[in-house]
Length: 313
Length: 277
Image (spheres, rainbow over the protein chains, first blue to last red):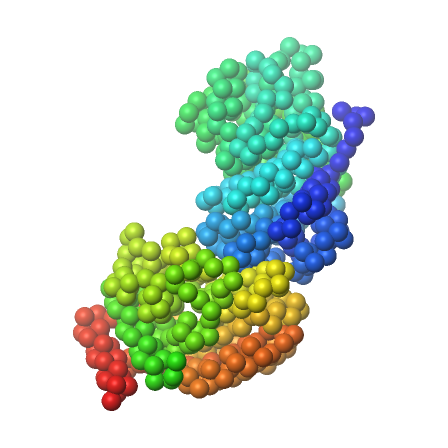
């Protein structure tokens, strides 16, 4: 996917908010001193009367969002994934999740593609954390098109939603007219030998991997799971029944994220051999996003290598 | 409503607190009894609320940031007509609307779920901000414990309220000087409380939290304060009204046995009789 247009999904988040702000006056955007980075600055510029910078105090920002939602607003609380899901976990659980308030959490700079800032800012645990909160929807879009659609779907949905975005520009490959529905995965490439269930930036990598494997006689099916919770059980089971081998690929710990969610479904409803690709129970490190994606095996080459070994094992 | 009428209601609220905690054989009587007079004034005098319209978008809001003192909130709500007084006996029971800490999913009339200390004040700030955005006149009240001030989030929220000039927000601190592990000054001294809120750009009023004249005057002053939020630091007695619970940290989170319950109700009956005399 060398020549394809690339956009960071945080950019999509910022633009989607700007568009939503124009059509829904109930939307209020909060940030925690990162508006240039999270791209909420676009909304802030257009709608300054509905943008509030809470400063470097993420726990309080989640509470502010809860109060706004309790009073009928649709707040989008925005910061890095590390602070949204990590630092403010308990505020999200108790002030947003438990009362099931209509708060949207826009978490940017997720995963290792934060890059040079290093492990302190590379949150590879957020989907696991957010997924355990009862009633929380967790979205991890794969490109600009899906990210914009996900933000709009989140705004329409009534209830708490955690949205995960990246700092690193990634290929735009989805159909511009794609229908996005919370809770629905999609088969982006059909195949019969092995299923690669991917999420976020790993969907494009999985498609690259499938292309490479095709030349070796391995016909991989690629499924895009944007909604980590509630996960599309049907699409997973149908593909597992067809191929009998399932690989998951995510820019997240292999513990508790997509790999965990898929294993939970398949182990109970359609047990098949599985292989989880992701960050293997370790912290990240400094480097460019591209270098890290390669080192941690999340590019097409890395995924293809794991799938090849798995299929032949 | 005159002070005598408020005192009578407060005494009934206290009986409800003791009865709820006794029925549950669990819960937090000490801080409920210290906050009772403030809660009573809020629901019967200060706030524009109607139990028949718990979802009125223009109502004033109350967030019990010190959520463990739910017995006082439930009891004052029962006196106001949100729930039958008899229901207080279901407090903390399986299937009850009266959860151990307030849950808005269970009981209409609760403006926020709370219980994890430090979080209610943030939600109250969010509600006050919503009123500003919507150009509505409703006011937001939140009650904090003094031990709760040890939570860093309280000061994140206070900084926000001061910075955003939320003059429709009133923070009340139930300053009974005791927390689970003992005297607040011995555990992790949050004092001086008044100077801290002043430093966070609040208008600060210090009162006796059991004196209805002072409570009334403080809320009136808060109403007339523009451009900044108000903090009312209310000096109170933990366990107020029940002789053996007063100023005793041991009664922070403990239920009375049969004999202690009888004594508590006798104490409150005596107070009630004196108010009738």
